[in-house]
Image 1: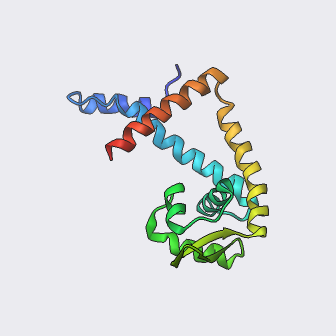
Image 2: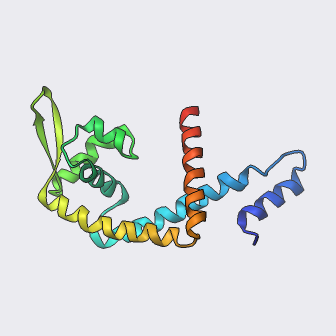
Image 3: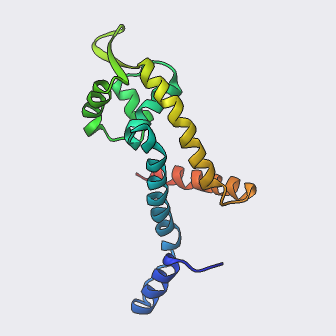
Length: 163
């Protein structure tokens, strides 16, 4: 296996602090680097659509569910935090990609609706997003990709329950 920056960091820590086991950085360090790299690549794939990653995430969530969602449902189904959801929905609504509608089952509630232009936009953007994801995965052989996907899901489940 070729060495990389993480191998170098581990080696340096072993040299200056031999009392510590820096080995666990081999996974978390690489995942952090990969996450930043993949995020940059994803943002680049969305740039031609004038979409940021968070905008795409909200629009794609509405499209995947194929129905109106409450802001709370959107929050649960996206990778966003609650603090900025109202502001983000305002921005998407101002762009004409979503609209808020009264919830017929809750007088105080609203449902978020994907507009025709929002649907058209996300349908085009998902093609570019999936193409980029395929390029990322193409670095691996199919069986390696399957194994990595399983292991990452296991890691995600394990860390999610630990929070």
